[in-house]
Image 1: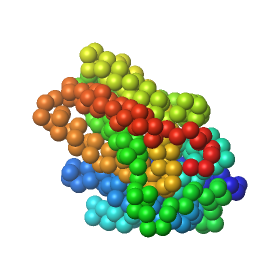
Image 2: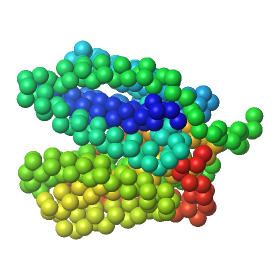
Image 3: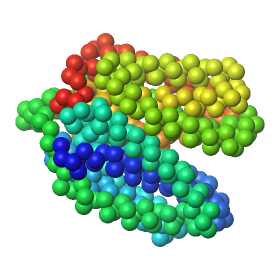
Length: 388
């Protein structure tokens, strides 16, 4: 991999995470502050980027398997994110924001599969992937902090998105020339439909990864309301717990990658399911402000995200581009439905049931992973750094 290529995944995922959190977390808040109280539409602003990711990431992943030019697809993704950011910045209206997110999201969905695919095919794939995921976490952290700085300077979040859009679009030509330099994956027999289908082990692994994505989304959607309104916790603790789990993720991604490289993705994912099961079980039994903050701050997501990326690629060794696209689709689906699902349970009962949904999901998330492990389909013997 070239020097430029070695930095493809970290920069790509940093900008993706930065722009994403600013749009989904702060644009609705900015609109409310200007008197827009159409909350259903504001909810769609949060969900639309994830919905476009769900629809189009698998298609870009399939194209990546054919082209094997991650730089081209990453550049296209940068242009898509720049379009989302610039369109949101200049429109300032709900209809304009919807259009920007929809059209830009078609192209932006190419970014993450290309970056992760290139990271895994590096010589030391698990280390490169850890660097990429650290950069993504750094993007979330920067995207959470900079809007407050801009507000203190008397500027709004739309101006911040304008700056981000310029930086994002200038990144596209840097990565366009990057080509795949790893050994080619085995060629699939032409016209062999059975060989081209993703194996059963992949779909079992996909289901397990999706359920773990959904665990976090169902709780995160109403965590702030649950902590401050139901339990009576302070707002600073809500912000502090988000910062703590993000910083811990930055510190632990390297260890998570080494652990997954050593023991395999399946055992790590099963272990994270058990961690979620225990932590949400304790919160359901002993609801309190400290327990809620501790549960949210546990950095199991770092291990889950690393193991899911590695494991789902290994589950489809001849289709790693498609695998990365499907992993993004799993995340997009979970992010699209997590809030509405937990909202339905809360609306029909009370905020007190919020820990029960992730508890139930964590109880079943290990089942497809155990089935995949038993079938020996999702845990190949090849190392992460070897050709997939």
